[in-house]
Length: 128
Image (cartoon, rainbow, N blue to C red; front, side, top):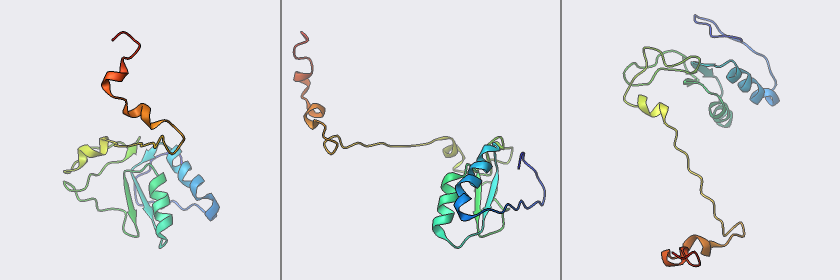
């Protein structure tokens, strides 16, 4: 698969279960990511593929067409873009990524007292 092809085309790629991540990576490397269909009864496999694939629309155990215009954002990722049919009430959220990283410094052997210094101690010794 070297490009984006439209039409009623089914790509069939044979691989062993140990190659699953490599297959998804190869799909990602094409740069295109409009739609992906996953046929599996194994929830962990579905989550694994969906979490790794950079695809705008992923359909699991169903027909791969049928995005509801005006309700479901219909757009891909990468070179597939979002197209003129993109939209829906949650469309703007597709452009935002929210992440949080919390580190417990005490558990790593850090000094938690440094994180709770009073304001009057911050400038000590600096003439402030």
